Image: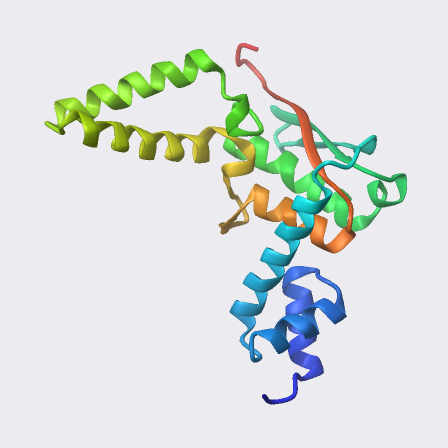
Length: 200
């Protein structure tokens, strides 16, 4: 295997925000392939996130975003384990990005588990009727409904939404990457989005 250059390590670090040693290891594991190394780091972040998921998150910040015209605003609670991390540039940047995401993509809730039962039932019924009208057999219609529900989650659940600045990653991916870098459990709590003239 060829030696990993400092320039390629720096390029990967700039792209992912991961530590130098993690970037070097990722490139080593992936034979210098930057795209594979990004995926490797993301998976590492995911496994770290899973290990830390049960840890208490009593610190954090309320991230905010006000659109330039002053007619749209968002507040979102981003939680972590320590005050030190809550004040870090990387954590604050994540909070800002999540607030911007909510402003732009207008999610209904944070996770699929939080989708209101009545909304989900109504949407499932609509999807089923559409499939039946397309002449699909019942068993196939159910699979189509499940597929459309997954697509619905990507539209209305914050963690499942493609990130507005890079649609190849979801907000959940961004959060897991952050966990991998800072080494703490991170959770997105409540959020509120207000647009002038819209009903609450």
